[in-house]
Amino acid sequence: MAAAASSSPSSATSKYLSLSFSKSPRLLSRFILHFPHNSSKPATTITHTHYPIQITNVRSPAQEASQETFISRYATDETRKGCDVLVEALEREGVTDVFAYPGGASMEIHQALTRSKIIRNVLPRHEQGGVFAAEGYARASGAPGVCIATSGPGATNLVSGLADALLDSVPLVAITGQVPRRMIGTDAFQETPIVEVTRSITKHNYLVLDVEDIPRIVREAFFIAKSGRPGPVLIDIPKDIQQQMVVPNWNLPMRLSGYMSRLPRPPSDMLLEQTARLIAESKRPVLYVGGGCLNSSEELRKFVELTGFQLRVL
Image 1 (cartoon, rainbow, N blue to C red):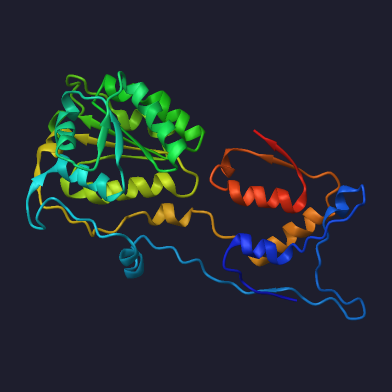
Image 2: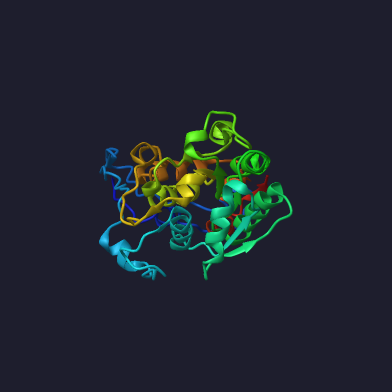
């Protein structure tokens, strides 16, 4: 029996699951998985065609054409501050709400937010309240939450929320101001190495040292936050980078070859067939579901309806 590739895991699963319900009290007989088999003939060797996964960090023309064209409020060759580049990069990622508490090292970003007609700033009363509000926003909307804080104590107040987002798989992008580059490492006023502090409680973090990298870094941050197992990403931007003038290049490709190679690959037909056989042979199956199914609720509901399995949610 040759296993052919399927367009999606859900369609491949339904291909192998032919469900027929019966009145037998045994749970096993709730459904029967039909596999082609002829006892008069020797077993046929199962062959599997290898289809290489296509992962790229450059958007194809079709992907670009499918997205709505973004209209910038600046001319193509017009110079602007790094903080304005940051705000426009957020707009290009579809951000409409941020939770930002101002401070000296992030004041330029707040000034740039006032020039945006797309993004609304929700002012929290504390940075920790801002990061948890962004986390709640992400849980409710499915889009990455965005919070902004200043350097030093403002940045460290985000730690609990970042750790919570990582453990609960919540997509989050945290942006922090930082002292100017020349003052990093000098124990300057309100200087905290927030990249080192949050290294173990974020999926990834960035210290921006070149204003021209802002468009690429923001795109990468949102991609990392949403892809694979969702989680928080932190971007630390020194104040002199926020003030530096630049003409941004919005077409820089992402540099995530190592991350791309570790993303989960789609399941093969052979593995789906083996999984279906194990399900059919189970005696008292129970689904033990955790936060990883947060974005697969419809598929999970359909699976439970088809199989009649008991469901336990963490």
